[in-house]
Image 1 (cartoon, rainbow, N blue to C red):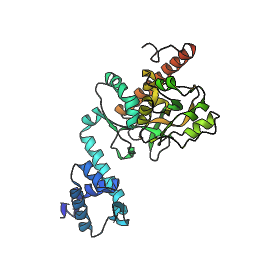
Image 2: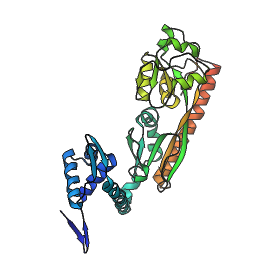
Image 3: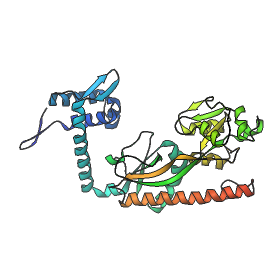
Length: 325
């Protein structure tokens, strides 16, 4: 099973190396199989081929848990660097395709609530660039080069040599369906939340934090259903199941359609924000620069429009949320 690639150079089989790298990166034979479009048995076989070739085991297997042992940890970094260099060399040979396709990674909630509806405007401005969007909750290592740019929600500091541009902030505020307001109990002051079911997003927001900022105490914030997707929390609120603590960016389309309303004006600035992120080495590529400039511009325009709508609502509550557009 040894491949001779030239005088004095003898390498393990490429398929075995690819299978090991994918399994080591995911710490899962199943996920590696999905990525490489093969069966889990094929990944397991190729890893055994590599281990037999090297004469060492590379993984620790404890039940269903998979981890790298010392030999695996020693092999992985150099192998990933080699694959990265091969990928970059291939891109240099075929740059036309690379420049036309822009790969973007985002969270599903942001993609559905904000980005998808605006992407046609990017296509109109830059018809020579095709966006390949990947919506996933998995944290992507942008330094690996699998994606050109990402929109991340977080503190704004991540490891690696990255260019990070602040895209938009978020505010936190309660929302509910209009029907919930009509049928009661009353929801005129934050203190009235004690009479309602609280809906929880288990990723980011915290009812206790909002109530403390609003000067309210004595409400049991542990009660109420917990949902692991932000959009499910908003859907549940729109269905009249309770009051949700919404993130402003994700709730905007529900508020614009009238499916949700804000019972109180008070909002709490979120501790996290959205950022446009790319590897520093890719940040000045034309397609990456064009996307970054476009999304930052659209975000600024939306902020100006939203501020105008809020001002109009304060002056006349009957003003349409879309500003008459």
